[in-house]
Length: 139
Image (tube, rainbow, N blue to C red):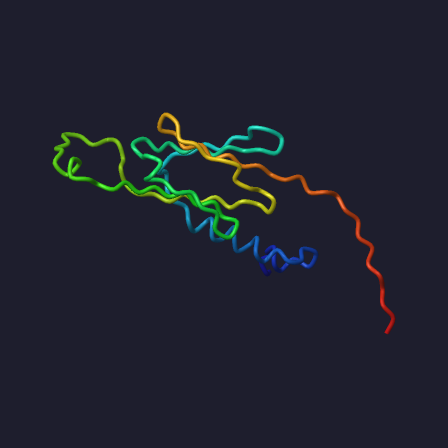
């Protein structure tokens, strides 16, 4: 018995890219840091919220790479931090990368950092329904 996938099913044509995106997303699981929420804020809008306590705007970057939203955080340690002696360090200050695959038509509409939370807003354009008639050529 052969395993049926998106790219091998006879009625699903051109879904190889989607299958690769799903596989890449499964491999890039970043564990639980930083924690995040995904919420639907409207019929065609979403918000991803990451808990990034201790990170400033300059420590964070948001990019879209091949339909993949990539959020990175990296804190630079300065001289004042090097001189500090922690008895307990429970606030994580490590670098991170979180990736989210976006469907075609989904775009980042904005981002803001407030109270230690990074909010990334997304919106999805509504596709126009269409019917296309294909002409059959002779010979």
